[in-house]
Image (cartoon, rainbow, N blue to C red; front, top):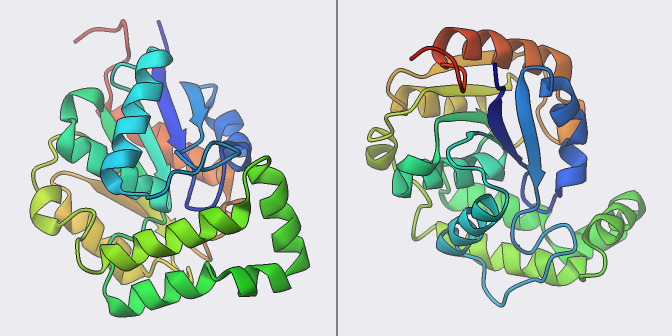
Length: 238
């Protein structure tokens, strides 16, 4: 039996190599592909980052890699991209898994995220500055941080996804997060679950940012159990 394709998307200001432990943990169950979002992981940084640009680039990469309708696991902002794709290009998605996905961008949330992305703040944190320099080379991580801040400022006025749009998603969905995450609250995670028809939710104790604090093997067990209940294997009986 052919394993179902899974595409894993990293969070904002991250890269695919950060998600390698996740891919390793899920590779027994899925045919996993890791992908850098536009502007990340050393890719060229466009003059403007928008949801439409993320989606168009993602579709182009999926076509190149022959990912027709994978399960998409999106971590943090990667989950927003996955949900946006499921809304606007539903035929390209077979199921959605979000992990610690912040999707409500009110003024308070935007202020918090843009604060975290401030170049002066990141430059003052030696370990973070060195990490960003490494994962985004040869691009300039400071340019990416500024573009991301501009994007988040725009999301306050034009939400990337709305509850009404989420209610239209007719694909199996699993919503995961930590109960004490400093970026994505438990209430916001529960609200996402309630906005996705037929979705399941699983919460673990603790934080979900940055990705290395997520208990990846527990996450893989939750994903595998959910997939066994809801997904028909590629090449299996319909």
